[in-house]
Image (tube, rainbow, N blue to C red):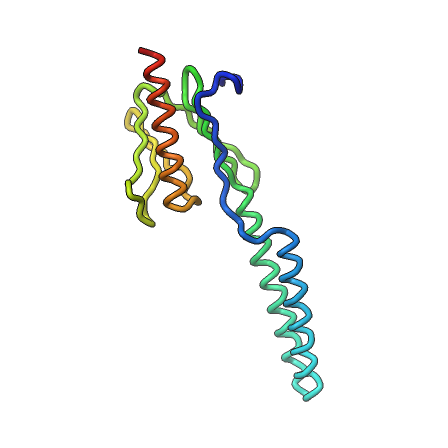
Amino acid sequence: MATKEDLLFDAVLRPHRSLSKPGFLIVMGMLTVVSFFAGMVFLLQGAWPVMGFFGLEVGLVYIAFRLNYRSGRLFETLQLGPAELLVRRVDPAGRAASWTFQPNWLRVQMDNPPEHESQLVLTSHGRSLTIGAFLTPEERLEVALALRTALSQWRAAES
């Protein structure tokens, strides 16, 4: 692929995570404290098994957050250079897959205005690739418009 200076378009797409790591620690701390005190109320009234369910609840919430943060490690890169568009997807486990497209024949398909089900699809020579599925419809449209602009500039430079 081309060097960074040769790129007409270079984007990294990542899923949005609204809760920061310090926020996660605060939420888990508060949940733990509330669950502990609520469990103590039941324990003191003789309903000791309820305490275990409060602990189980905290554990399940922790696991759910960890799985959510793990899925947030997914990312995709789009790089349009002098000869090709390179799309690279790295899954949460770190496995990478890549696709190349010749820019002359590449079509960028996206509904405008976008709807919730709208997909950003790259199509060329009978092959299709959906990208940015984890983005909001508006973000997918923004990427589609920026990529179309870069492809137009690439085609104009080739003429």
